[in-house]
Amino acid sequence: MENEVKQEHIRFSVIIAAYNIEEYIQRALESAANQTLKNIEIIVVNDASTDNTKQKILEMQEKYDNIIYLEHEKNKKAGGARNTGLAIAKGEYIVFLDGDDYLAENDVLERLDKVIGNDIVDVTYLGFKIEGDREELVLPTPETCTKTFKAAVDKYPNPWSKCWRKAYLDENGIRFKEGIFYEDVLFVYSGVMKSKTTKIADFVVHKYTSGRVNSMTTTVNLKNIEDTISNLNDLLKMRQTEYTPEIDIIIKKEVRMCKKRLDNVLIGLYGKEEN
Image 1 (cartoon, rainbow, N blue to C red):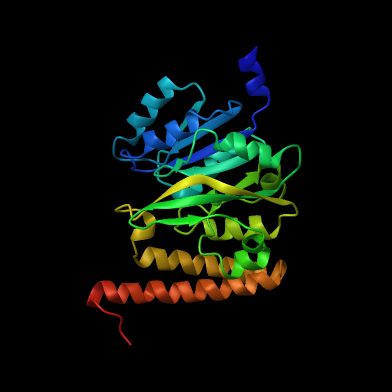
Image 2: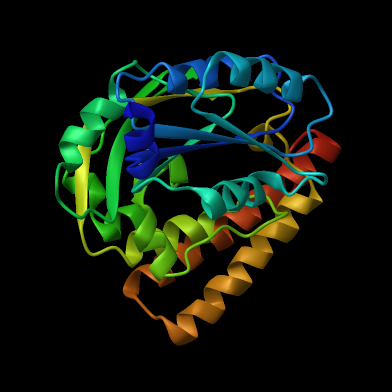
């Protein structure tokens, strides 16, 4: 009977995008599967990995009964993997977890559940800690969770530092662009700007691994630049139909980022930034 109740009412869907992270995926899955809050589901999407990621996931699935495994035949990048998870998610709320990161403690979802309570909350801002080649603690505050701050100042506009109400995402058609880098730019912008109700979980929920070799954030090439321009094009279209003061801030930031990535190409080719 207990299992039936869990299936009827799932509080959180933890969606994990996994691509060639055989060294990290077990840690991510165990951090989610061992949560003290039990009415959760863990959806892990293997995005056509070519290493032993699939085998590691299947081993974990045999050990834990709340892991749902999905697989892409072709790589769709993180946005596609997250969309695949969203398509089947049954939880009231969505927590994204990158496969090389992990939930900080076994009770973080229970604590998050208490923060949300019985309210209807579109977006809950989460704390996180950066580990690896650098150390940083990022805790949300009322000042750092305004829409203007998120557009103008926020250094970490990512989907996993927020908890999203599933019905809110569905009602507003908020999904990721697939097959591109920086898939989270439009998702996070739309998700934050359209939100009407928010809360703050001012404790560490995620631990983020910085500087992993071959991760998207440590690799710069022309595809990165093409995808930045693609996001800019979409933002300009949104500016015509869904104007907000914040969208001009976002557009200017993306233009500056495009220039920075172009400069990085020159640095990669010639060893220094060209004038």
